[in-house]
Length: 296
Image 1 (cartoon, rainbow, N blue to C red):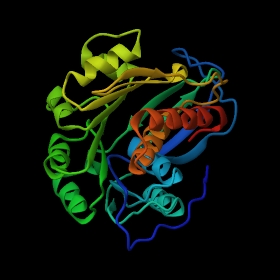
Image 2: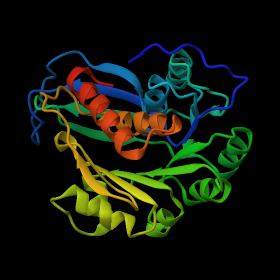
Image 3: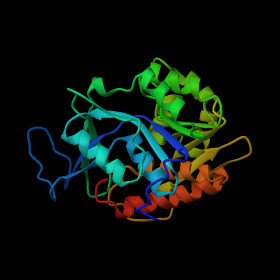
Image 4: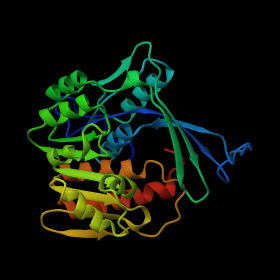
């Protein structure tokens, strides 16, 4: 896979527009999680990398070959400038990535344990939340055939996506904002979640992710995908329900695996690849990510 894509041709519209959040990830690898009153020493120096689900998804889609634009905000500070440059270096369109004055950039503190699991605390300044006006303006100027949106954004921003995107493919991710509830799923062509998010939405955990995908599709989206970590990803469409298994690997760091999956999936769909084959490629790419990444 090409990890250094050529600069996009800005004369062409993006294949994918990603609507959501961007932040800085500060990652520490630890031998075990701290217990109250005790200090745990990191196994290696902390790393600072671009992060945030939507930024990760946009970068993954671009690495997979799709012309991609990120609709998001950060603070006009050193971290926001760092994110802006990282997106440019990754050949992601930043025409609607705004740096807000007098606002700090969000920061995620990520602890990674030896089994590759990650524990995340996100400090997200409310001032960096997307507004409906920002989203509407961006989507009007970016005629992307595929749009990914985080459903846990402020409701007016999510409604701006749902109201605007009448054509093409609309993909939703994460548990919908409480004010929206599951009604937001009915406007989607595809809903993608992990098993924990699916359980939150459905009110119970299904040991078979294929069943969870079926239940999610009953809530309205044309198709649903549930990522299941080392087991792969399950999907349910009008034609079929199945589990696409993942190869066995020793995970180094699972941070960003779901975003790598979704970004790759979207790029594959943009090329016209059928959903089952797109999922298989995305599972393979996410598996490579968790077995090689050092803290993205």
